[in-house]
Amino acid sequence: MGIMDMAGKTYWDSLWKEESTPKAFDPKAAGLNNYVNRRFHHYFHKLFKGLNTKGKRLLEIGCARSVWLPYFAREFGFQISGIDYSEIGCKQAEIILRKEGVEGNVICASFFAPPKKLVEFFDVVVSFGVAEHFEDTAACIHAFSRFLKAGGILITIIPNLVGLIGMVQRLINMKVYDIHIPMNLNNLWDAHESSDLRVISCGYFMFANFGVLNLSGVEKDSFLFWVKKLALFFLQEITKVIWVLELILSPIPANRLLSPYIVCVTKKPL
Image: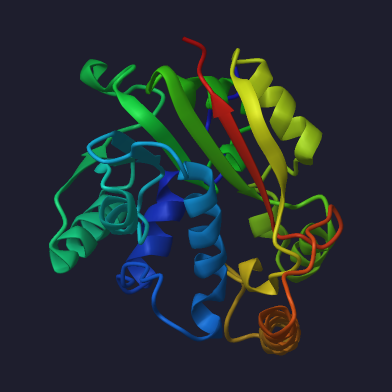
């Protein structure tokens, strides 16, 4: 069964080691640099509208240096936990929680082999860019679902690599592209249904975000790196122009070709 992380623990440890610990997401912070997270903020508010989330348990799978755990606790009143197998990433997640003064539980373990007490323990499970790193997507989603109580909600967010984002990622950094499984909406939908989860919604999210493109691992002293970096800069500036237009007018509908994300929300049967 293809349940190995295609990136590998060494990749994540080295990546998080190079990065400074980020600040927690603040939905009130203005500016284009916070635009994507604010869009997710509106999405989550719509998703949880009418649900009693206060005191409910939420788990983030792949919680390394998570900016979202404090947000879910403050905004919705969740009791928060996170799981990740990168010790460095878990320590950074704990640092963020401490800085924000938010109580939470960070578990350093593989989500394929979690502590038994966590199985069927959570009301909501969310992941941001995890499932696409495993060849057997269905096995990965099934592992996610094991954490859910009956009637619990699973939110799976992945990058849309079957559109223009994936095409550009292949051109600028094939190594990063190769640690992902490109999936369209139907692929992700099917992976959840195969785990006997009931699909509530599954769709492309946002119109554009070239900021998801990744140059990690490209030799920084090479001329080609700077060419790619300049191209990436221009693409990100184009993205910002689109966001300004959306702020002035209204959000442009998401689509298979240009959207940077796919979001699938499912429910575990009672």
